[in-house]
Length: 225
Image 1: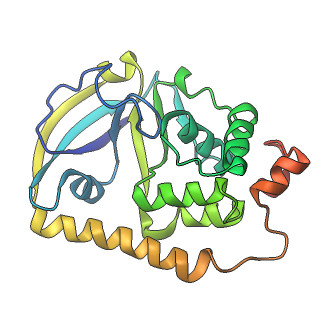
Image 2: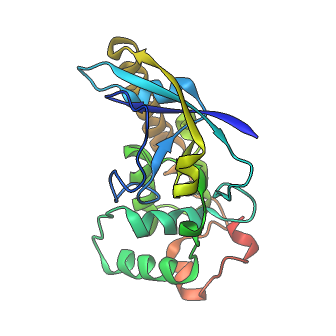
C-alpha cells in the first residue's frame, strides 16, 4: 500500500538520511512524519519563521509496522517507549519507582520495526505523561488526555529499509502567520481541557500509578484498557 506522508521542517529535505537526527525524540532516532498535511504545517513553523512541508510517498508493503494505539497495547506501553527516549523530570521517589516498573514490565520491542505510529508527545502531552508517573492523574485520565486538542498521531521511519521505501514528491510552504497561531491554539486548548475536565475529575475505580506498583499490575490486566 502506498501512503502519502508529510514532514514539517524549517528546511526542504529531498532525501532523509538514516541515522541522523535527535536521539531523544519520542521513539528515539528516526524520521518523524504525519499523514495529516495541516498537522505538518503546524509542526514546520516557528513564531517568527515560515516552514516547509516535505511531501513523500512510501510503499508500506513488506515493511513491519508497530501501531502503539492498537488494541494490542495500552497507554502504558506508549509511555514506556517515551521513558526510554525522552528526559523526564523525576522529582520524587514515586516517579523513579514508576519509571523503573514501567520499563521492566511494559517493554515494547519498538526497535525491531520499520515504522512506528502513535501519539506525539508535544509539550502539553508530555506534561500529562509526567503527571501520571508523579501520581497526579490516573490511567484513564492519561489515556483521555492524549486525545485532547486532536493532535493526531505521528508516522515514524525507523529502519534503513523504511528510508529506502520513500520517494520525495515536493514541498509546500507553511506560513508562520497562519500556522503558528493554530499550533499555539491547539496546545492551549489541550491544556485548558485538561485542567478544566480531566485533572480535577477523579472517578470511582480510577487506577493510579501507586496502585499499579502496589498490586504489581501487568499489561494483561483489563483495568488498563
